[in-house]
Image 1 (cartoon, rainbow, N blue to C red):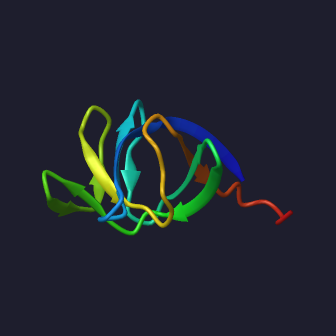
Image 2: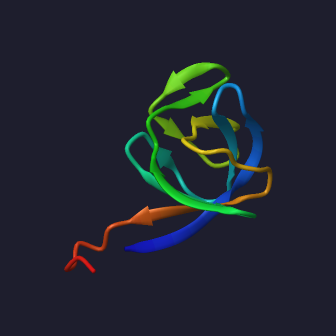
Image 3: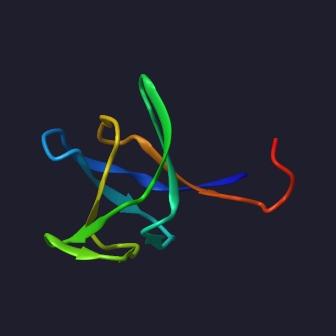
Length: 91
């Protein structure tokens, strides 16, 4: 697996289990795997939904405010990494 830092969490809504991402130079798609790492937590999850202005989308672009569903609580400024499978043998 290869991980690339793409941004950070800008806001978290605990009741909705949703996080707004601030992404620098990457496109995030439904189905991508993200690693969210912060104080006291570090987990990988698949992006199951993306919303822009409360409307569902399949893609979130840099410089666009978009939210994703998160499986675990996160915090503002947590690091977000895109996880890619290298296609090689599994570790």
